[in-house]
Image (cartoon, rainbow, N blue to C red; front, top):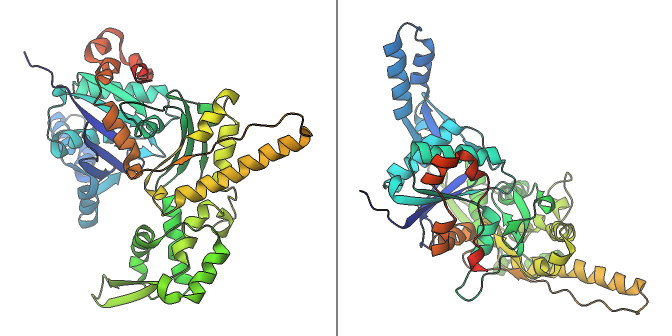
Length: 427
């Protein structure tokens, strides 16, 4: 009889990247693009085979199941060979291709983590608005294909809140501001449960900062090779960008002391190998500024991120609002800009104080409102906040009790995966 190993495997899925590893680790073991490259020649052979030629059909199907790659290797194969086509299983946070998703999980488990899924409990994540049917499909694949002993499907913002967990306190009420590469979500959570009706999202994220930096450098006439301009803009964003408190003052500082604030980027042209250099100036602070003044980037969306956060909290139940303002948690790599948390806290506080002042003026001083505490939480691991929260929770004894087990699946079916209990023992 095989004994169960109390180690948990964690997959944190985003649209573009998947983070995977073992519970208890501070950072994921692997970060791979969520993409699968399938050999189309075998699939075409399968389609063109006659119905009577069962052996040819079967062989082509088996080879198509075996000949595929994921992550960076998949991207490299598609570039070097026309027979491999890329498939992105997750679109806008939702699984769009379950066959590709199953293949992706297979490679993650056996080729990357190199473990037996029957020996590990699994923690997977989902976006807050995932349909219950999607959880059922996930449960079927995990229990039927991989025969896992236990499965827990967690909501990403809840794990981001749990990243601040300590043995003395775990605050599971707050607003998670998750700024990824492709989208920004503001998600209120009360006692570990997502308030779905109050979720807000904005179409400005990390990729937009990169595109804006690229646009500014191009308009200024910097000599960056066109085929390398996006990658240079991305590296400039990650290395040099910061959040300022006042744009006008920042412009003046750059103009007075350009030698102090202007950085220099040096690279090599991909085609010719010749070296080139360019200056990095105003885009250092104008890039992240699109979160606070989006009109400088696009006329399609003009609501600043602090106003979106305020609207999100104001639409939540009234008895949770003070606790939500008190615990605004940042998550995602695009919240790592220097002083991003301070600027966000200042702007949200301005909106809240103006509302309290207006309320007091209407009451003519009869009843004075209590001040509202606004606190934006920033920590060194916020780039991997969701991962770290999952790692912490999957390391606790409560995790194994909260998981759906193989026995429950065999008795009740995939419907058990529609909901997952919250770790009530941690409050």
